[in-house]
Amino acid sequence: MSAEETAKSRQVEAICERHANREGPLLPILHDLQAAFGYVPGEAIGEVARYLNLSRAEVYGVVTFYHDFRRTPPRPHSLKVCRAEACQAVGGREVWATASSLAADPACRVDVEAVYCLGNCPCAPSVQFDERTLGRLTPDRVSSLIAGAVGGEAS
Ligand code: FES
Image (tube, rainbow, N blue to C red):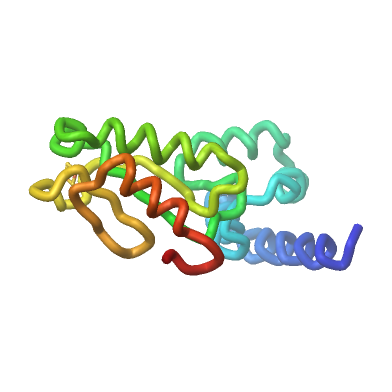
């Protein structure tokens, strides 16, 4: 086990211990793991299972049941694409198709997720790129946003 893996394992153990005396500790542990690492690391699932005397399948089932638990490290940028009706009616489907297709590339620097209304309906189709809400998106424009997302900053 590398020094980094050992440190991570100790952190997982400390999080488990923090919740040891709680009733129903699994969800708080998973939330704390995600807060610490940005996702729930696969190797932590076994450690949590051992600590709580559960099977790996039980812990994995909870992680995969809740949409908010990530199983991979977050990418540097986030793109939320509105898939609600007002946006879908004016080109949002094409924006979503483009964005989700580009995000399927493992080298993509942008996490893409569907949301249902960003409160920007008059400017549909809308997205939120990192903290900025943008309207009147087109497939070309969303491609440019994703292509421009290099390093820790979008260009
Ligand atoms: S429906 Fe897309 S912003 Fe409201």
